[in-house]
Length: 118
Image (cartoon, rainbow, N blue to C red; front, top):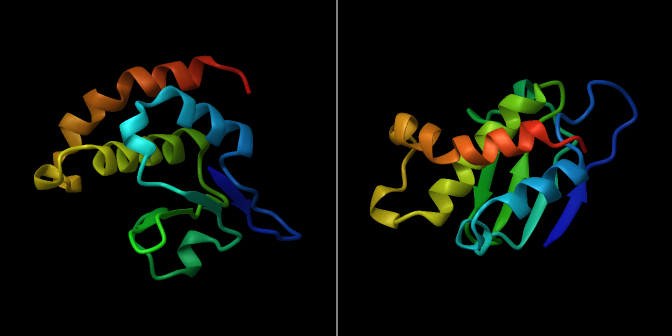
């Protein structure tokens, strides 16, 4: 999987590093990531975009864009895991209204991620 890191010259920095992303993708089931061909750590700051969420998946290019500059590492990791769980789950249930179910589904992966020093 290709990881592209947007270049910028000033703070705030990305919440996740390339190593963080590699770890997260190693922790989750393969079916969660099979629809993702590339990941972009965008140089854009979320509140300067019109996006409602910091994680955006583009079906046509199978690209996952992460707008994490200035946000918290744990929160971005949690949102990324939720997005991956939705992508890897049954399509008829693929919506973010399943927050309690998603929280319990990603908990073991999140716990492993937080315990691992990158």
